[in-house]
Length: 499
Image (cartoon, rainbow, N blue to C red):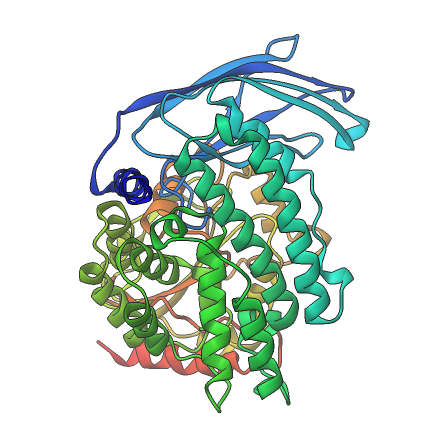
């Protein structure tokens, strides 16, 4: 009997991993939002194919939901054939109603939310077809887990075990209202999130930046990692591949393992890629490889020293290594957008306040430093000010070099003009550059986001004289004594040498 049940569960998992398809159905939402604030603004972001939650248009679609005077709303999502995720939030009070909630084909959910005291108190109820997992998700989110209140790893693991038990007890109360697959994914989410939190509390500097201090590479830390890894984790590879939180846990654990086993205390990009290929298989390997190849934030941190050649090599290999069709399509998109020698996107955008249209091909024969930034971004203005003070003076008289600075986000033209005027003496760009606006109501801006898979700002690209990508791994100095200054100077000189 146990063998029969195992076969049934494996078949269910096979369907949801895209190797077989389930019934395609739309998802419907309706309900009412009440608030003690002057206004209510509701938005929804849905993820039919969740990887890391950052790639708009590729991973998710965003919409603002219209409410009537009574706060009632109704909307539906495109049909899906496997579980996805949805984020629903009230913008004014920053109240999360659905926090990357699992959704299934055919869900028809009614939501009632009463938001009080600016979001401090929320009465939230879900009803309708498929609502069990929503009520379960909300109940789970109300259990706090602050790992940083404990100093010793044994205390952290003890707290983690206690919180896990409480959350698993909540799940048992809802088990009859959850499909076997959703139940398994939620358990993986809980385990992955808690383990990842412990991992970050112990090895955060290694995970984010690859920073290793004296004593980090020690038997003690290896023992700590083993204790974290040995927490009971009844998670199959197929379920792990569908979990929002288990994937980043495995990914970060592998980074720490490689640093602690490497006497130099660093993580090589190509070796890390190959480690995933060797250590995992099937749908879990596909998901981890895709996560790694698409996670731009690590390219500014722990893997910041990867060369264009190494990066392109891994992307190219990923085109054949990743087998899951929808994940392969994302890797292919990243390869086309970022691989060295690829054709740069020929944008067409209005310039500064003149509205004169400028396109990439206007600069053929010149080396272009393309600085893509957003309205509220500390790293964006730090890069702009460092570049202008330390690097621009060396190249400003070279007629073969141009800086194209474009704001790409949902901000208004008025906001963009404030940045051009450097209000508050904060410089995101300078009059010496070609300044372009790709914000709100500029459809080309959204095309640029999609073409370059933008998820991190600033994104800096160096485009060669042939309008092809010379480097998407541009060193990004943020301070006046940053060693990346010299690296970027040499990269620009190298690009200028090529005819």
